[in-house]
Length: 492
Image (cartoon, rainbow, N blue to C red; front, side, top):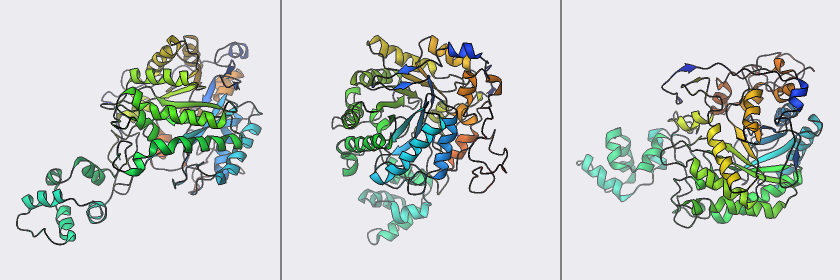
């Protein structure tokens, strides 16, 4: 599938990294401690956000490769690491971590132990808790009409106008056969919008499909599911949980302005934020202040009819007032504008404009990729502060230098600096800056090589190191043996 690219094609240089001395680093906001409302203290305001590396077992268990992945980030001793989106319901999801049953706890407990050991106890470990709805792969057209399309009387009526000489009153097989022969223009007159989408993109559930009892019951089911998952995270030894209210998934969809549920869980802001607040309340009741609880949500959905900065500012104030320990902000990454997948593949929510705005590349428009959405995030933090609330806000998106990060903190745009792609390129980059060795940082090129691997559900690596010292003793290698799975260690 092809991904969105901006009309302008400007190649942007990386910001000057800067190499603070040890004294300058120690005097900076970036490397100062931060205490959350729950009492948890971060040694510094640096944060490795959740990234899905496709390393769990097929049953959703922690694997040796998962342990190696997080051990490597922990060696860089950031203030916090957030473990990848981890499913709160016990449903199959491929090689993605799960926490929907007690059987997952031992592996997660070992993950906590490994991170604590590798960071010397300096890094706090959070786990991102997610729920997601079903999305099917784009089907072969013949298979769609033969097996998946639910025939309605309206199909026969519309088809009779197009095929007047065909007997459509008998077998459903005849109707399905004739539907499969229609061209795109004809199908538009026979199928409704959702049926066309299921044919051309793959069927996808939405939180406002309340005619489906399982969707209708989500507000009753999810608070308990998230609370149980948080309790397991606490038992496993995590320092906190991050409720995943961002991007294309269930909780973000409840917050979306596109949520048209009429049962009190959609429509206006009050309705859309209701379930996210109920989930948080259930989680807080389950864990108290034993661990920190915050959420990640969108500063802007970047889709037609989607939520804006004004919506996000309102939600942020409500979350802070409810007692969340932190607010972590992201952008876009929605299904609504995703590119059409190939037959046999599922739609990927980072292929449209909203996805590009989430992870812009160095080949960009005039605004460029670096800190592209920071002003939106700063506006949200400002709303929280104007409400008299001090909840820390985690900034993210194209933060690639010490000067850039430190300026954001000093100017009050945010309280914590998160960097995914730059941390993947060099898991030690925060530590190198803190130790006055910034000239040794391996710098992300913002080509989204890593994101392309994620799109294909392949083990995520970085082009800057995945071919380096492949013969290193003990280096974990990809399934084809052609890429190393973790960055080479920094020899201090």
